[in-house]
Image 1: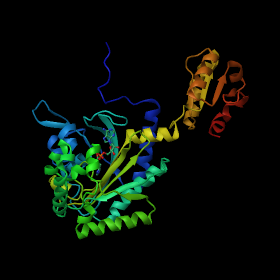
Image 2 (image 1 turned 30 degrees about the vertical axis):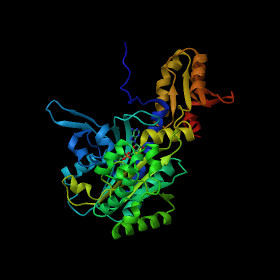
Image 3 (image 1 turned 120 degrees about the horizontal axis):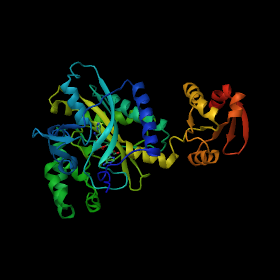
Image 4 (image 1 turned 90 degrees about the vertical axis):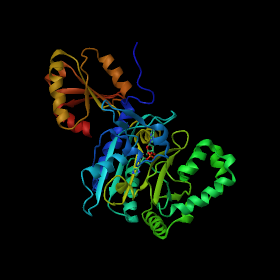
Length: 415
Ligand code: HAM
């Protein structure tokens, strides 16, 4: 009996992977234009890397980590996200010693043991970017601009970022006190998890997905009313910059993110194109994390997008990312068969997209395949045509057949 793939983990191929690749290529180009370089970190990290960064009160650390003891009895975890791993690498390789900014982007699989639903997997992919060393709102705006323009380049038009400021660890106790008082007045309406969260980290209550908790939050104290002067100035300036750059945003005072490391700016982008509203991406500023993981006191800003989700949205809005090669070379006779590989090799070298029919023989079968896979023109090469240096070009949409000279095939295919 054959075994299926592990629940929540799937094979990628065909049109879905075509979209992944289109997104990856666009990302690599867009981010290197901004001076970001790629970083690849291991999938496994020691568990404390996530506990000390993502945070003990988060759902990720509490419920969702693929955490196990390795054969040397050390607790390791398959990364549920990559900010912690990137920061760990920055500290380990002492990349943050000088005052130079460090800009990195990454792509790779992440692992969370979550309940399954549309667009939610246990192995999923993220593309992310992290920028270290600059505390200014201009740094937030630069990263958001890169993200915005990258998504526009992929053809996404209705982009409205949700933004908020979660202040600093110093300014938060005042908000916590007001929020706890609010909670106590209506505590019977909140779920068991929220009763735990109000003690561990009251911000997590705002993030609860249970509808009755969201209803009970009506009229809650708003964190932006409790910001320290510096955070308030940062937030106001960022909003000015986004307006100046025509990056659409709306303020969302309930947006706190599910990870503990954020300071000041927090943001997300939701999409309703996946059925239920779900987050396409999220991120923000995390000025204390590098120090918390043993590095120097260096500010940072970053985000990650869900590649599986972005690919699904683009497929829904735009169809297939990549049709089959637009041409199919169908050799029909013995001499033609023998020459076809050489001819196709020349055309490939000239940059043409041509698929080669290697089954030999039946033209009908070849044309049926071509029609099914969206080929535009079948290049039918018989021994007779080959002798005269010609090929029959059959346009599959119209049925019109022409005769092309072999040496003009590359220019005609490109046209
Ligand atoms: P996050 O919001 O936990 O942030 O994840 C970012 C994105 O990953 C989400 O918006 C979503 O699109 C995708 N994602 C998360 N879980 C799943 C899942 N189970 N299945 C499919 N897609 C999923 C972070 O991970 C932070 N490290 C972002 C960041 C970078 N903050 C600063 N720098």
